[in-house]
Structures are given as structure tokens and as C-alpha cells.
Length: 323
Image (cartoon, rainbow, N blue to C red; front, side, top):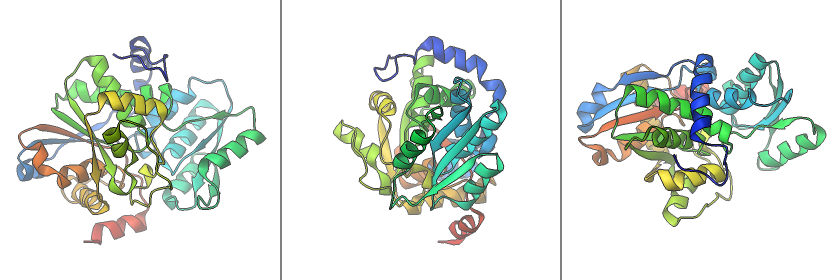
């Protein structure tokens, strides 16, 4: 596999160690054949769902690997919800405490889950103060704490790569479609593919309303959104990719598909109706991309990664019926 200037620690030896140590702490991912989409789009579709992972998303892979590697007893992080939940639960398992900075617009179910796992929630109005600024303020107040990055860290990427390990052990896809927010999960799959020397094409699926990663890949330089995106995919409301994630994706991801909110919700409804699977909008990005650009995948073995299923019940009901 390649070496990365932003993370020289991300070596094949380290990845192998994580793949041996981390899986016993995880729930195996769920593989679902999708005969409806396969017939409709004339391709072979397999959905890989992290909705049954601990805390309801792939983020637990990253959070547990990260927190298990540090001596700090208190952790501070920022999250729209899924990483915060994962950090809170990992902290509980590892005997640590945590504070999670969350936007006031976060799904209530995610706020309540962080608290249920024992985390302290610090709500901010991102129109008044950014998540990053609030985290910086808290770190000044608690200099002994560890600031946990949600995606821009080699331990996060390596933790997420265990999903790629599971996928390639079970499937031999032509294409993997994967949601992109900060780039932690997609980076993990890229390095897993490279470590195993597979030829699978990896495509990102990003909200059209927050398409910084797609624009970055097209222009060959890292671009940031000026404001937090207003997309329905709340887990992808990031300002930009992380530096490490950008270094990995610009070399290892062939394209990033921009998915309109309407297509994201179409993917969410498809999951409910045909797979009996509750998926949050961010998790539905890959299915939304497949539906939105279906002709691109004809005749291929397509793996669609569903990254999580944490969604507010009231909003979910609206999404299911809003056609």
C-alpha cells in the first residue's frame, strides 16, 4: 500500500495489527442482496449495512480504535451525532468520560443517544459559533483532555478499514459506492483495497448541496464549503475533507457522485420498502447515487455501503411519505 505524508504511521504492519485486534470488539456488518434493484438496473447489487453496528453506524469502528490507543481519561469531540454516539459508547466501555459538541440542529435521537451512553452534550448554534471554535474553547478549559477527530486521523481511518476487510472477504465487487462526508470511511475502504491488492473501483456518494469533495477531486486541490451544508444528509454536513483523507482519496478514489436530496430520500425509501432496513439519509447516499446514475452500473457487481441508521422518528416518517 502507499505511504502518506500526513500519516506515516499508516503502514501495512499497523493495518494488519488493527485487523487482528479490533474485530472482536465489533459486530460483523450485514450483507443483503437486492434483487429488486438488481433486476431494475440490470446489475448485481449487494447492500452492506452498518445500521446494526454498535451505536448504529460505522463510526464505532473508528471511535473504539482511536480511544483504545490513548491514555487520556477525558475526550472532547465535535459531531452531528454518529461519531458522538460512538465516542460516548467507546468511552463507557473503556472507562473514560467525554464531551460531545453538537449543533442544535442535530437529530434529537442522536443527542439523546449520546447522553444515554454517558456522554455530556454541549449544544451550539453553528450560525453563532462553529463546532471547531467551541471545541477549541473546551480544550482550553480542559488541557488534559484528548481532542478526538472524527475522520482526519490514521487511527480513525484504520478502524474504518475493518469494514473493507469484511467486504473483500465476502465479495468480489466491480464497484463499491460509499457515502462521503469528512472522508474517514471512504479512506478506510481505499486503504483496505490497496492493502489487499484488489482492483475494485471505489466511488464516493456525496450530497449535491455539500459537494466539496467532488469539487476537490475535479480540481485537484482541497476545497472547503463556506458554510455548513443544508443537505438532508446531516452526517455529511462537513466543511471539507480531512487532510489525510484528501491525500488518500485523491489517489485512490476514481470519482465522487453528487446526489440530490430527492435521490437520497429515494434511496432511504427503497431501503425501507424492499430491504426492510431503516437507514438515515447519510447512509442512503450510496443507494441514492445508484438510483440517480443507474446507467453507469449496468452489468456490474455493485456494493452499496449503508453507513448508518440513526434517524429521528418524526423526520423518518416524513421522509418515507414525502413523494
